[in-house]
Image 1: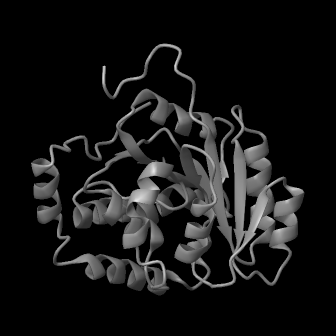
Image 2: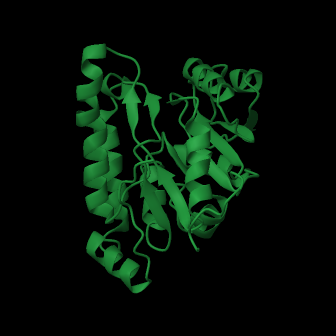
Length: 261
């Protein structure tokens, strides 16, 4: 049946892309977590975005393929990595992401189980900072992101610290992305462009750990500014009601409901 996994169908190969700038310590932990996967990624690509620390050396030592991208910007850096992938599925982590041992396998199973799935994303939990604040911080930081951005898009958004998509889908939308605009949230931009003609799914069982530093690095207002900038860059042509109407007309109704498993 179309869209379903055939018995015995192998898991697709996965490329993991990690953009990094001056984050060697967190990157070392992320790469160590990827080395402990139950199903190891076919390749890990670290994009060194003009780091002044030893991020590139850490990436090499961790077995990653290192790509240098001197133009500063997370969208540009991420795209440089995506463009160099060799696998059917591109998974994205940030340098401070800590995937559990089953993360790569869980991502691959989503695509193996559904041939019509183009992109999948999942939530995160905080793995540092005061333990008593970690769970409340999720409701302050991540829950509003998923809820409010879903309303702005008309479907679930991708979360850059924990997402994956087919290489074919990336190549279909790449030229329309706003990669040179440093104010753009690259994951939200990608969500806008994938979310009309492609199937995007939120899967709550695909979880990674992330750092609580968004609460301490002083970048909260900048993140908020970037979020509104990215949304308004696509409006009014990409308002949610217009997007939903286009999805219905195209017969793409498999959009963005949470899925367990």
